[in-house]
Amino acid sequence: MSAAEAWNITTKEDSNNPGPPHYPKSGFDPQTGIYHSINKFGDQHKIPTRPDLDIATYVLSHFPHPHQAESKIALIDSATNQQFTYAWLQRSIRSLAKGLYHTLGISKGDVVFVLSPNSLLYPTICLAVFSIGAILTTANPLNTKSEIAKQVSDSGAKLAISAPEELHKLVPTGVPTILTSRKPNKDSSSLSIEELIESSDHLYQLSQVKLVQSDTAAILYSSGTTGTSKGVVLTHAHFIADVAFLRWTVDVSSAQNDVFLCFLPIFHIYGLSFFALGLFCVGTTTVVMKKYEFHAMLQAIKTHKVNNIPVVPPVILGLVKYTSKAGFESELSSLRRVTTGAAPLSKEVGDGFRKKFPWVELRQVYGLTEICGAATFSPTHKEAKARSGSSGMLIPSFCAKVVDTETGKPLPPYREGELWLKSPSIMKGYLGNVEATAATIDSDGWLKTGDICYFDEDGFLFVVDRIKELIKHNGYQVAPAELEAILLSHPSILDAAVIPVENDEAGQIPMAYVVKAVGSELSEDQVIKFVADQVAPYKKVRRVSFISAIPRSSSGKILRKNLVSQSKQKFISKL
Ligand SMILES: CC(C)(COP(=O)(O)OP(=O)(O)OC[C@H]1O[C@@H](n2cnc3c(N)ncnc32)[C@H](O)[C@@H]1OP(=O)(O)O)[C@@H](O)C(=O)NCCC(=O)NCCSC(=O)/C=C/c1ccc(O)cc1
Image (cartoon, rainbow, N blue to C red; front, side, top):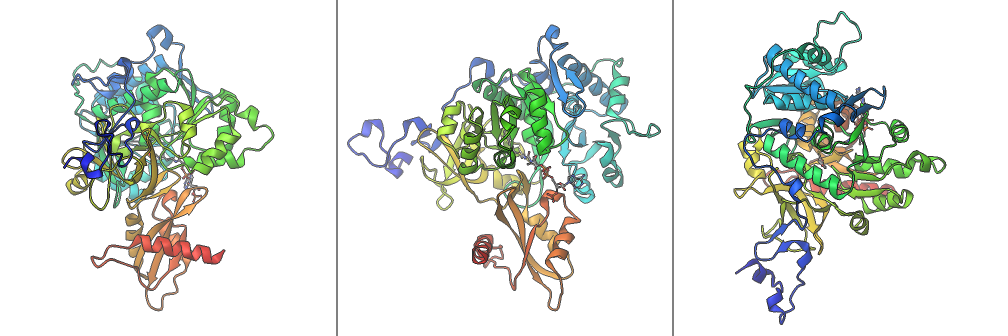
């Protein structure tokens, strides 16, 4: 029986039997159960197939023409107004690559660990590492010493590049470390990237590095659908495809001449894809903020006449809630396009934003580290507005299935199931974790996202729930298993479970259910502090409830859904 027969779907040849509706504009093929992208790449966006190409060469080949590159500004520091032209960027990437290779002995396959907030030099570091075939791994500078030590060891880092203020976290790992910028005290013995760039210009070219698209380019850390942080192995081919996708999104949204604002962290795929790679291929200017701060963002938009900002939902909520009536229109008058990703944006907040800022186009994207960036986008703003709450349409070259979680069957439009994706940018797998890789990518190459979604009749994706055991706080992933392991290491805690609780500002916050030892006086504040001392701030447990037993299935799996409804009941009874 074909899939069409199984669902009794009407095809054009079968008009006598009306059956359930057929949605020809959805991109859904009833024969295969697969959704195909309705949008197509133009010739200029085609993903290059020649094998001997690396992501740095691909990006540099799209830089503005040399006579424009000397004056065209690539990056502006929002705090100091320091500016890098495309020509300077190109020279700094080449010099740093030579310095890493000749002076520090970093070569193909060596892992370079970067621990830094955003800076003008961050893109140079990424592209220099890629250009010598070394492997980039990045981390949130808010991570604790033990989180950093784990990643350094798991990735097998040979060199670390650290912001001066984070250096102390790397010292215990023993990995050789250079600084992103000079330390204020001149007697510091640590070499800096700035010095390495300056001293390497005269070194001879790197003609001996031979790279192919299938070489590993980066190991970025993600929790996937379960468990703790895992290294997502991404190749040059994955980044090349992602950059082709990003160029397409910029072109179809007419953003080629926009001034962009970057406060999203470049250490995550979202920021990396836009600000260290993709936008350089379009030739735009980006204003870089070290990190997000609401008023500094408003100031940067006004000062630099920013047109375009990739954001996450809490930023949209902030703009809806905290921009004062008087003055904000002139402060934000230059803004034309805002794209939000990393977590779902509610229809209410999206509508609130559109009402308050009718001159700004708001689009949602759906992206994952495991697919090296984005999978969906709304080409036209009108369609995005008409379907507030949608994450957009499949980007060209993506296919999707919506899979019934009970039967495993692919589902047609308007039916909810787990989203599976296929594209040229699907990760190679999780580093050294065959089991997690096999649980995430099936034998046909479909990546199981862990998100419950549906497509509408026009091929627009709606994310409705999450089956993966993951909490999204400010667009950052928090793995309950990681926090549960920390809680269980407390001598007075017998059992523990962590669940997401909805929160207006951050999307979700982690809440812990704790079974304490008989006679223990352990308080909520003590539990919160115990976890906070060991994790980055975004992973902190922010609410605790003591309970007599954690509900578990017969196989011992935590019944998180029961705890989620229990927490909702408790909240309602408090109202
Ligand atoms: C802008 C946000 C939303 C808010 O920033 P924030 O207000 O500074 O909040 P943070 O969560 O970063 O950190 C603040 C906390 O850190 C603390 N903190 C502050 N500096 C310190 C200090 N030096 N020491 C120690 N504590 C401190 C601070 O006190 C505070 O603690 P607390 O009040 O307890 O939360 C920020 O959370 C943020 O950038 N989130 C984005 C995360 C993100 O990029 N996720 C992407 C995942 S990948 C993905 O989905 C891909 C999508 C994609 C889509 C499209 C594409 O084309 C490609 C890809």
